Image (cartoon, rainbow, N blue to C red; front, side):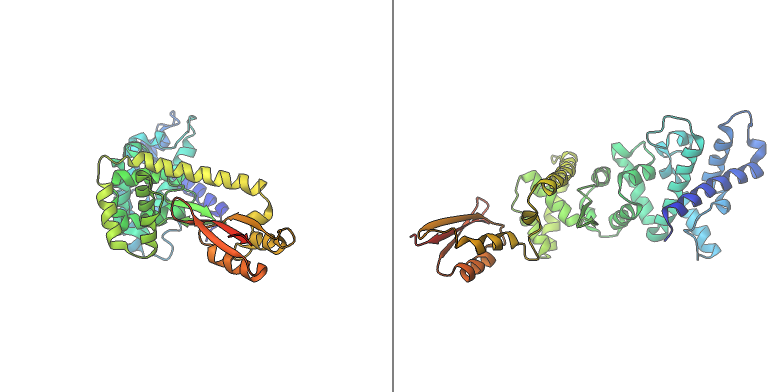
Amino acid sequence: MKTKQARIEESIERLKQLKNETILRYTDEIDYDEDLSLYDVMMEHFVKGDLDDAFVTDVTDGMSEDEKRKLFDLVREYNGLCFAKGNVEYWLDSLENTFVADFDMIAYNILDSYNYLLNLAKHGGKRVLEQLSNLRSNDELKDVAIVEYLRNSFVSDGCLTAILLDMSDEGSVYDMFSDEQKGHLLNYPEGTLYYYGDNRLNIISPLVLGSRLYNDYHQDFSDQLIEEVDENNFGSTVSLLKDFFSDDSYDFYDSVIGLSERYRDYFRQQDIVLNNEPHLALFAGNDGLDCYRKIINNLSSHMKDRCLVAFEIGMTQAESLKRMIKEILGDVKVEIKKDMSEKDRMLFIFKNLE
């Protein structure tokens, strides 16, 4: 795998090579009194495929000449994905947030986007390019250079590629979403399509995503659908979600943004907790019970002959804590109380109390 520096050097060489070949092959078409003319001529011939043989890329390494030609021919049909409004005429507007006419920088990024398309097509063929093209049905993606826009929205090209390939698979669970809805997901991917946890990138299953959106809309936090997903009851869940997401009255856009914002708020809060909570409360051993273990081991020296002790507990910790209390404290009464969601929430220890 190439380093970031090596990829940058390849992209610089790619632009340099195409400019040189444009001058050599089409010098009669260039107005050398106009700075923009060289780039206009280069882009015109680039989209026609006249410069394919000069395009520097490692995507085609190991491919035969026939395979290379077929790949370039395929991607050329979709080169509008690299340009604003899907048209080479708007190549100057194809780099987001660029207010200076740095022709080299704009051309560099367009060619880099095209190289990304070559790699995407190599792994997913026409179907993934068609899926990407269909995203223009989303108003927010209609006029942008889609490849550049989405690559800036995702944490890495690899993450974007994995999701696009999954979306384009025949019979994918993503079929429950319309192309417009897929566009919303790709517009706000962090917290909806992927998240960071345990120091690694996690791609969210579309079935889990659909369940979260459904539960969010219904304000049903019982996670019933996600439990079904975990139990592999896919059939009924997919059918229910497909019907739900086809309902025009459902505000899909707001719910996607809501999930994304809550994700960011959650991890922002996690940082606050990490920096301020006691270490033992956050890092509680392999079984998550070290905090309780330390307290319970010291309880006997503080408990009177008749007393009540209460803990708030996690919903999966009741049985382990009951066993621990019996082993350490002996003959005491232990009761578990549930919260409003019918999850185990409070543990009570009674000593010589009825």
